[in-house]
Image (cartoon, rainbow over all chains, first blue to last red; front, side):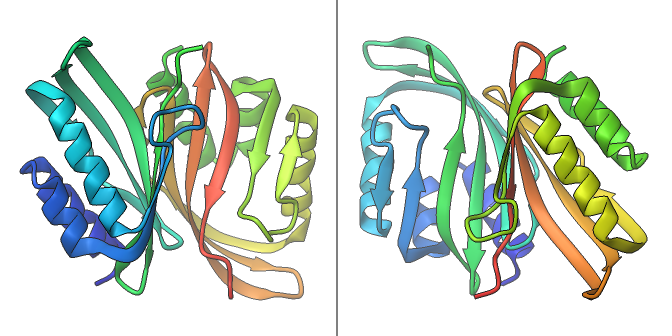
Length: 121
Length: 121
């Protein structure tokens, strides 16, 4: 798959809420996941750890209200999407989570995901 | 300006080839510019250094054949665009440069630009 084909498949699965299915299908076994410095779980290494991180997030969700995922932009073996999510987290109330997500693709597999959003100062 | 307004203004100016004008107008004085590790000029700090980097790039160009810049995707105080450029560089021949460019906006100004593309191994 080309980088753009991987990007479009990821977006399609995520829009259906199939996050872990997307990870299983599209991520390399040695994929890394990187959050901003200071965020919880700021680095996960390997597909098993990334799927565990997704499960952990799901367990923190009280109610999912909706998400908007942009079409991807692609270049140089990378692609990015924006993600706007409206969700009530257990013990934290309703949150609007907005970020840019950047992915690197090598040999048709996602080898890194990195999330960009402003941390509260 | 909102992050999306900054993004759309940057794209509009860059599509007109007005790169340094965009930097002058939209970048914070202490903006940083980051290329992949191992790339030439992998970090420039401050608007003056960033504009000098742009001038240096222009001086290396023999002939500019065209560029395609995507619409931006935006979230969490960041936006990204893709950039596909067809250019003949002095002594290097015709190059297709493709990348994802990621920008952080704080108080209506771009405080960082980061370029993502695969380095030759």
